[in-house]
Length: 569
Image (tube, rainbow, N blue to C red; front, side, top):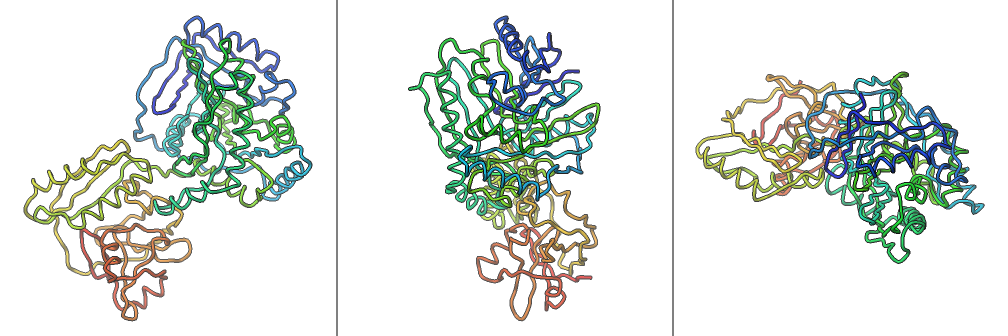
């Protein structure tokens, strides 16, 4: 069954049961297909689908691409109306897709960058958006669950799922190609990428680094100028403006530099005119566009197909929204193979090592899920008063800012005080949960404090210090080793550094000094740990197993249980 879903800007539109399918594999039929699409819109129907990168020559004959791939150059369904609903992130079906293999070796990638530098030195191009592919075996029955997973993981504003039978597209694109409504067209090119920091403080440093990067600004400005020129073909020249230049946007795995360009289109402008003027988007070609596309054809081994094309829909009111189909997986349902394209803009200042690293960063959406369902705080409530409340709320606010969760200090404190009034006497553990839209849930359970030494063992699970979720207290805890009631687990990271217990921080007494591992080893900034650091009772130091084995004393600490001596076996 045909199933198309567009999760654009917080709203979800679903299209099923097309009245007609308009598609073609032939370049010389693309224009006639656009005429059919325009007719359907005038008749009061919605159209939804995609245009492949290789359709470019239908709009501009001197644009060069690979011969078309297996997918149609253009595929659209004609629909009476969509099902509209607010976009909500709910628990998605569990699905795992592993074994993604890149089709380009480091040496081949380096050679491609050298070729692009040679073309730049000759003055043929200023920038080339060079891309590679990752491929894996894929079960088409899991495609929608996997789409939900990458959409939620990426938190992209222009995600789309297209199940067209023979092929499926799973797009977690953050980039707007264009939005056109009542004569106003907006484009939002994205050029400039850096990995997220692991904490809010690291994130701010990464944001400053990207914002001040002259290389990324130059790349971005090149594409802005290219798109302004493209828009001049369909818009009044004095209406073309750039209201936002070099804006930094935050996504779960990367920070992106974007700019916004707006214009007023000429009265006679049609959907075909827009594609003829703008397609393919300059952010995924380079500049000048025609020359960059020649280099792309020379260096890339396969057709891009829907990747780097455009996915979107048009309403009967002629409102059109299309993404740039980056962060997009193509599934061949008969061959049961998935392909994912990823790349970046190469300029004279680009280095092969940094660009290859950026490719791997952008591909993280395939295998990592950095977006938690809920943030969590566990608080100690004693006779109606919370212990270290300000530190808990500060940590929660920082994590909320990091993950773009809604956070209301007033609402949270009111709920906590209401709970404290109910449990005014005794010891309680309060579990506070916050979801992405700011909904709060909290409950109290009676706390029985155990002062006996805590039995602990070394964990066999090696923790990855690059795992962002280690640095935030969330309900996503599947990566932690399982602990049993009779003992705790003490963990180490990939560098052999000791990190923390599963449920608390580590403090040791060594040579008369109380020491705790630094956050950089990959651990949660516990509130009791922070209080002890603020008071200078403990000091941060990288610790190894030998340090623990030679320690005079080992403590397990958290704000609910306090400090407990540890017997490590």
